[in-house]
Image 1 (cartoon, rainbow, N blue to C red):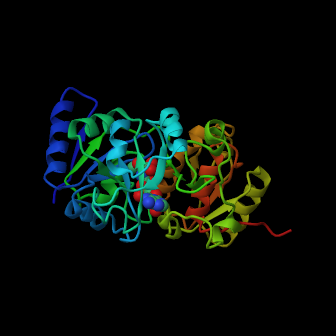
Image 2 (cartoon, protein in one colour):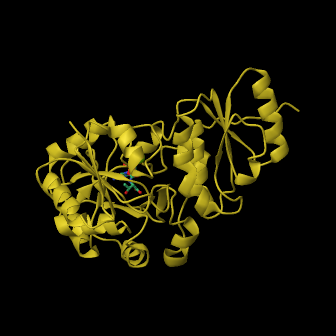
Length: 345
Ligand code: TXA
Ligand code: MG
C-alpha cells in the first residue's frame, strides 16, 4: 500500500478532507493531527475498520481506543449516564486534551474499540484539522496515537510516516502538534475520579473544577484496587538504545558522561539547552530549563531523534512533577523502563 501525506494548511485542503472522509467511510484508516499527538483514526462503529488500526500499529487487542467526537452534543449517543463531574469538565476543558472514561451504551460502538470493557474513553480534540475532519465525517472516530506500538507517539507527520509507511493509505499533515504528549485520561466512573494517565489537563486544573481527584503514586498503581488504563502495562515511548533518567544537575551529568565514555559508550543526552556545552556525543535540547510546555512539545521528537544516531545509551534529565511535569515524568519513566543513572559516591 502506498502512503500519501497531504498538507492541510494550504489551498487544496478541501480535497484532503474529502479524501480522508471518503477513506474513513470506506472502512480505511487515516492519520490526522490533534493538539496532543497524531492519531490513527477509523470509524468507531465499524469493527473491521477498527481492526485495521490494531494491525497497522501492532497493538495488543486488549488495549482499548479513545473515541474522538466533533461536538459535545454527541456524547449521549455513546454514554449510558453522564456523571455531573463529566459535564462540568466537558464545559471547561473541551475541546481539549482530556479523555473521560464513562460507562458506554451497549451496542453503539464496535466491540474492539473498548476491548470488551463496559466503559469507553471519549474526547473532543482541540485542533482545527481534527475538528474539521470529525465534523465533516459526522461519525465517531476511534484513534490511538499513530505510532507503531511501543514507540514514542508522533508529534509530526514525518514521525507517522517513519512508523506506518506502507501500512496506511493517508496522513493528513497539519504540522507539528502543540502539546506533544497525549491527553489526560480521567476515570469518572469512580468517586473521586482517578487519573489513569496524566496529561496536558493537570490534576491542579481538574481539582479547581470538580474538587478532589486522585493521581495514584507508583506504589498505589501496583494495587489491584487502583483503576488502571489497560495500555499502561505495556512498554511505551522507547527508542532503540536504553534510556536512563538522571537528576537535573550539570555536575552529575558531566560526571556520568565522562564515565560512560570511558566505558566506550556513545551517549545521547536529552537535557535543557543550557547543557549543550557538555561533551555528549549527541545532544537533543528540551528547550529552556524552566519551560515545561516546551519540554513536553519536544520530548517525543528528541526521543525519536536518538534512533537516527549511533548512541549506545541515552541519558535524559528529569523535571519536577508540578503541573504538566507530572505527565512529562510519567512518559520519561516509561521510556526509561524506570532505569536511573546514579554516579557512584
Ligand atoms: O492525546 C491522546 O489521547 C491521543 C490522541 C490521538 O487523541 N490518543 C492516545 O491514544 O494517546 P492511545 O490509544 O495511545 O492511548 C489511550 C490510553 C491507553 O492507555 C488505553 O489503555 C486507555 O487510554 N484507555 C482507553 N479506553 C479506556 C477505558 N475504557 N478504560 C481505561 N483506559 C482506557
Ligand atoms: Mg499511544
